[in-house]
Image (cartoon, rainbow, N blue to C red):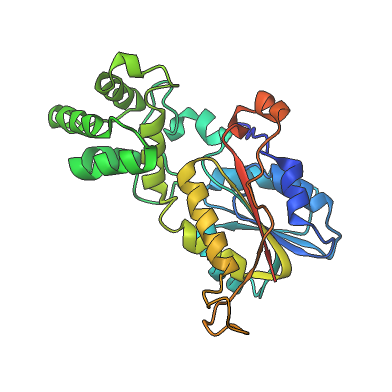
Length: 309
């Protein structure tokens, strides 16, 4: 299947990275390489792009999309391992890093990946198909309390306990194998009058996907590690799509900026506060109305930018 994916807030990301033509840049969520292609257009032959993705199909699509460029290094890995990746490539630090978090349009559209609540497909949801944990494993083997907590915390689903209870009741009879089976359980768990805010399975599917791919727990540390990998003046641009991601990024930025806690009447700092740089975006950048109209994925997107000092 063709990897179709319109990059969210493309120009805003390019502007935010403040690209130097001879610089080294990392796209930690390469996908179909929409953002990366624009970065590469602005690099000289001395510049370099490191493209990281945990999805092997995404890497194949990116190589095809970027075949005209010779200064790209492709890495099948997780951006959470940014320090190890750069160390392996013998790169001390870089001029910019971009992370476009969440699931791609392609992964949603490629129904056999099990990300979508539309149709009937095997419960999978792995971004990296070489990993063992799948959505089927989560749904059929997690304890009821753990399922309820995941659906509530990662999906912000008010009916999480009822959904978890009904999943556990259903799987006593047979294994839950398909997205359709799971959707039917969710729909029966949510009163009809509360099913008018988008698809009733949207929040639960998001929660299970986040659990399968471990998208939230390492994110704060990943952001801090990315900042530490930047050269002075280097920029980190991160696009988030829901409040859990955005909160982790915002908190990591605030902590990386550092804050002196000394009494105001002291002539100099004695608390040892250390700052790694500045937050460029006091408030997150959001997509224009025109982009939101054209690209539905951009509606909930927020871009936050940090500059290393």
